[in-house]
Amino acid sequence: MCDCGKRFSEKTPIVERYQRTSVEWNQAVSIRAIKGKTFKETAQHYGTSSSTIVRRFDRLAKSEIRAVKELPAVIAIDEYKGDTREGKYQLIIADGITKQPLDILPSRYKSTIKHYLQKHGAQVQVVIMNMSQYFKAAVQMALSRPVLWQTVSTFAGIFTGHWME
Image 1 (cartoon, one colour):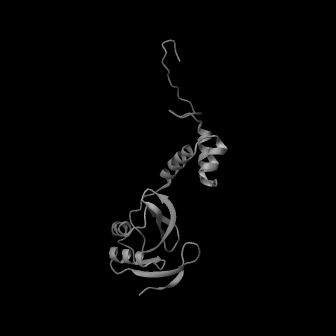
Image 2 (cartoon, one colour; image 1 turned 180 degrees about the vertical axis):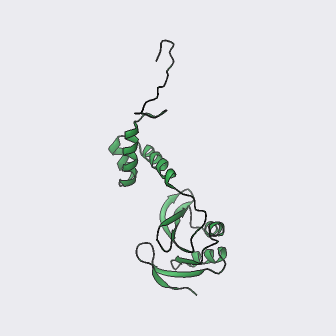
Image 3 (cartoon, one colour; image 1 turned 90 degrees about the vertical axis):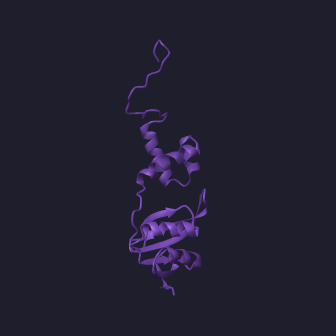
């Protein structure tokens, strides 16, 4: 602070502009947010709020997320329990060959699935999924004549199953 009462910020490698925490603290929190059990536990460990940890995690996740332009020929879909503004359950879409997650849809509604597959699924030929008639209907509405593979065990293990009629 100078004699005139104004504050002037100075560039420093320790703290980024407009931040109250050091670069090293943010890096440590980011790592712990990923590897820690819960955001609450991480917040307690670093003496901050859960919402601060969630913001650091979101910032990190945003830099890692790649937009899906086109889905591969073989995809696998499954639901899982999460919690978003759109519902308790989300839908994960993975590469059916490599099993790498490609995208997570915010809900498992038929309209959400249908619109996503219509937009990104031009190359999809095979869909690996559970026995849900709901998913089957959404996939058939979105894709022209996909081959559906009904799974007994989905992402938890090896894809095994049989063809759906």
